[in-house]
Image (cartoon, rainbow, N blue to C red; front, side, top):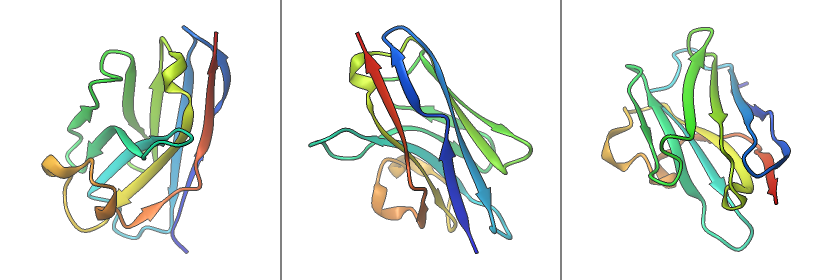
Length: 126
């Protein structure tokens, strides 16, 4: 059974840090592209960061310089280190994998991803 499980969310004050984790299991051949996304109440799901099978990384402009995506233990776990958190970073955070092709320029397109985790809530307060 394939599974993505996010963890590490929580409540933090503005300026603080959190580290999210996306653990994968059951994927025989791994992923081609893994993305972190977030969705705040009343808003569309938006891209945050992605890591490709070759290790290349991209970030949304809104998190560049504050968030860091990385792999741990091969590609079984992908971390999202979030620093200098802002109120507007509050959202449910999801990881998703594309099992068919590399990230490319359309990594922000949520429809291309095969599987999603259940999400982990991040709440930033003043």
